[in-house]
Every structure is written in C-alpha cells, then in structure tokens.
Image (tube, rainbow, N blue to C red):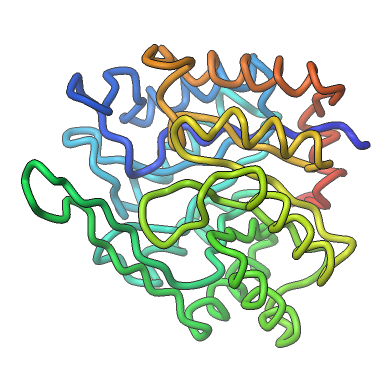
Length: 295
C-alpha cells in the first residue's frame, strides 16, 4: 500500500465551544486559534488541513469572506508545507456564491464538494423538539457550478459522500464533464440525520461500491463522535489513501476525556495507523498520492 495521508478537520461548524454536555472549551474559533491548532496538527503528522471559518465573537459558522481568508492566510503562514482544504459546505441560509467564494479568493489546494442533498436532524426528547433540522440542498445545477469554479482555480475536489447513493451523483457529474479522474472520495459517516451510520459493514460497502464504478479512485473516511477512531483505523486497513481526524468530527481523545487540541487527535490517529502497518505520508508525498497539481 502507498503511504497514508492524514487530514485534520480543525474546527468544523457543528461542534460548539463551551463547557456544557457534548461541548468543549478547547475548540478553536478565532483565526489565530485555528492557525495555531493547525500547526499542532501538522507537527503531529497531518498533511492536509480542512478549514472552516467561525465568527470570532460568537463561535458560529460564518460566510464572512474576510474572516475565512484570514484563517487561510494565518494557517499558511504557520504551516507553509501543508495542503489547504477549504470547506464549501457552508451553513444555514448561505447561497451557492457564498459557499464557494473562498475558492477563487484564497486559491486552496483542495476544496470539499458535497455530492448531493441531505437533511441533518437531531431530536431532543427532554425539550420535545428538533434542535437540529437542516435540509441541505445540493442540486445538480449547484454542483456543476461548484465544479466549474474549482476547475478554474485548480482546487482538487474532495467529493463528500454521505450515503452510497451519492456515488451515483458523482458518476453522473463525471459523465457530464464536471469531474475529472482520478476521483477522490471522502466518506462521511455517523452524523445525525440522513447520513450513513458509522459501521464497518457500511464502510466496506462504500469502498466496494466506489471501486466498482471508478477502480482508479482514491478514498478517505471520517466519522462523527465515538465512530471516529474505529472507522479511520478500518479505512487504513482497507487501503485508504487518506483518513481524517480532528475536532470537526470528534472532541474526545478517549471515552469521556476531551482532547485539549487537534494535535492530540492527530497523534492518536497516526499511532493507530502505524499499528496496522501504514506509514504516514509527508505533505509532498500526499500531493503525489492524491494527484494535487501545483499552483
């Protein structure tokens, strides 16, 4: 097997900063915090930094292009060799133009590219209400637009697969000329709502289905919460080119114990990968493995 690329998803948009149940005071929020925690992740073995922007005052996800650009600029300054991967997922109420605007502005090496529509959902039985109810639309017209912008700005698409049917969407977009080989899939598992559960059988099904349609594809995997470490370890065994860790997906280093920074999560992920016989790629090797063209 080739060496294994480690991605760190540094902050995300769903996890919240705080001391309440299911939250963490250690989640980086400001551009400086995100950049500094990215440096810890790189020092621990991450080659790719998956970045989101948050409002420094509220901690909420933001479409503010100046804030997101500052996140990228400061992260690049501290992590000059790292591969920068910017989200285009956005948040509630963001337009397509707002979601993709960081790509032509910051010229990242990679960008996330959601392969279909889905709905996040979380029911709070104590409050007897939905505390998360987010229908997330990604039409073929929108996806075609995103692919065009990424191609124009030489950003490698990371194709986010939340369920196996989205592989068919990717194949349709490939047939329409929106995507080019080799395709790189990110299997996203275990989030609340219309997302494939984080089980070994489901991961194996995703890998087999992707390879059946595109034998020369590469794939990565991530999972939310307690599914993170088992899923990325299995992905490493199954021949993943890339696995993802970080506080976007999981805030705990072990059961009931909060990770104090992203470096701790990357260190554990590296150790698990090495324990199953995978060597860790450098950023330069990662660019070759994933076919990331120079700027």
